[in-house]
Length: 120
Image (tube, rainbow, N blue to C red; front, side, top):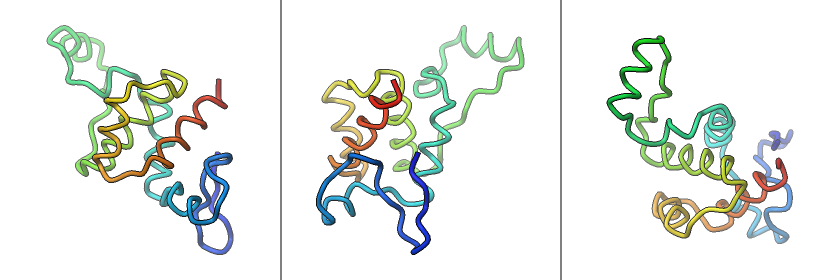
């Protein structure tokens, strides 16, 4: 898990990059790190729209479904973090393109993938 350093910088995930320039591109801000940690508890079903049966099941048993973030960029990060965690870092190119289109970098995607692979 990445921790905030004492000098105010948020470090990149371990093994994400070697050079200082790429480390700056692979690092996540404090809010983004919170989104990533929240995504560790979200089920895969939280990233798609609920089916009619799922809505009935959730209402019947009183299950609260995680709601998407209002910020599209943060929701893209949450979605990617959930998928990376579930697949162990092996995602189709389409999901990576969606993550990059939200304004993240390839180094950030790689950092999340390496984090998920290390957790397995």
